[in-house]
Image (cartoon, rainbow, N blue to C red; front, side, top):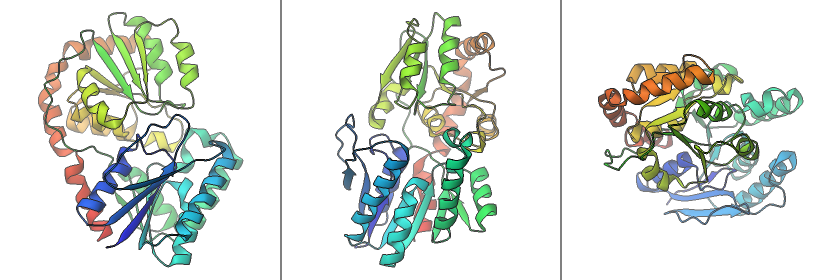
Length: 354
């Protein structure tokens, strides 16, 4: 049996893309799948139908974390047998590249985003240049390369002269759930709480929507700042980390899904966040930022609206209109849910690994 080791720097509990990939490689291609991540103090216990290994590190952020993680990962890779490595994102690629070269095994690379253009790097040119240099050095060794959407694939292909495939970050197809909605009109945000996600604007908007509530699911670097901003907002609820299996019964109870990324670098500019696809599977209309990939997706499938203006007052008016007309999106959401799902998307992954 072929063994593949999948590498990622998160704690695996909320990474749907890695989980779906592991299931496809195990169930559809019969591979012995190992997934390697890290374990933090607040990481929940998880069980998966494939083998997992999570490293505990003394440092969990900054340059030292990335150095320590890649050192631990390299030691792990050098001391085990396998036929393939799948590196997820640039922060696991240095160790994977070295191990693949020494072990003479195939190296696959899944870039979940345009890593060197994330908001955390675009205003730090020295750090950004280091990551760009690492990317240039490592990607030359990659055997197969894929990413999450066409615009990002085109940027990588032009930059490195390599074929870059696209596997969208869509969820498994689910039949429409007949769950009782929240009694109060409910907006939902699910995902990482990082800079540039528009969550602060969501909280400001809730001052103009006293009849609504906003549920925020996730953790991240600006979580404490966002909670401080929402201190006097009784209609803003922070759920913290919610496992992606539990989200499947929470999201459908909301009325509108939000994704308001700011134009902070090319990574967000061309993003098609997986939460939008999750909202579609939950059959709730979406309100998204006016950025190209999100705009095209929502316009093409008719599953919601694009922000007209980024001011709390105008957004509140738009949300009320969407809520009042929410059932006009039902047919489009049902059709999109049948098309934008992993049950169809995984065939591209199978073709790559074959």
